Length: 144
Image 1 (cartoon, rainbow, N blue to C red):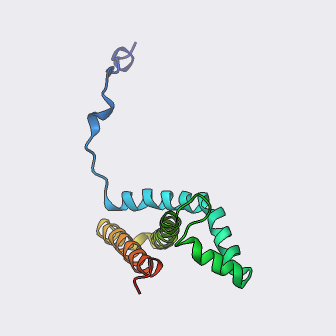
Image 2: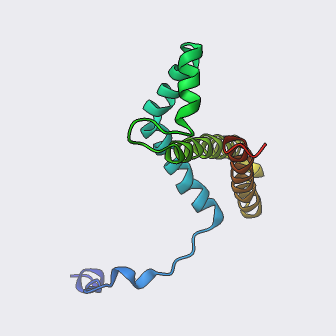
Image 3: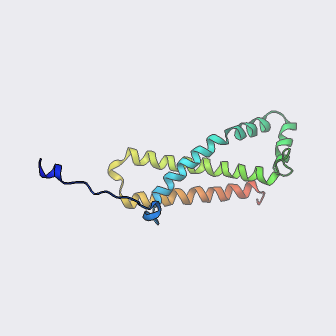
């Protein structure tokens, strides 16, 4: 037997799952996780988006009913909840678009990508998506 065969690998038992915490992700990691969450959210809320499109485009009566759903509600669902779901869709689309463009840019320009660019572009994506969501949310809630 050689020395490598004789040498046993160390065994680690009873490793605590929480031992590695707190682990700090870089900002790009959070953007990537939120990109996946926003994609899932858009997929799950697709029936709601289709209902909103159908209700807003069918006729004048259905558009009036659609507008009243945001204030009065729809059946057992209160209007504030419908407005929050619409706000979640707005955020999901904006974040998914911005993060997707960031990923495409980074994939096409490997030689330009550095740690500092990755961090600054991730902060830009978060800032733009949250800022535009606040602006469109203010419009959704009737602030302007």
